[in-house]
Length: 178
Image (cartoon, rainbow, N blue to C red; front, top):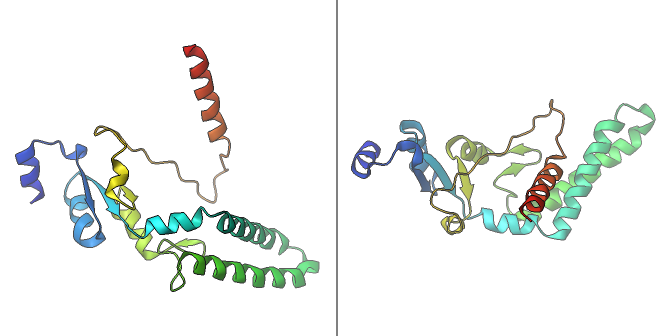
């Protein structure tokens, strides 16, 4: 099996990326038994990304996040109780609308309200990277290394200025090349 592949090809285990479209039958064993990197191919991802990038979806998502922020911060004021109930109803309507926008039958395969689905939890557990198609790798050199982004947790201070710092560094590097 996997050890035989390594022996025959001479590849160093950590330099192999194994791709599959089934979590349990394709990705669990290479992840568990070897140092291979794994890539999950999830065809449903493409249409979901298209929907999520539509201006109307992004606007509704922004509205949902704003309503949730108002709920979280306004609940400590007793005089806002009526408005809080209205916000809860509004949040429910927006969530339902967003869910049906992604897929009218069951919503996103990746998210249920603010939480990961069990499917997406397992993707994160057994796949080092995921994509909608193997073809998405064609634009990268064979020796390209994908790095993960640091994930912020609720108790950590947000780091919103990293992109600005990157733009600044890239700008400085370009100006020094002139």
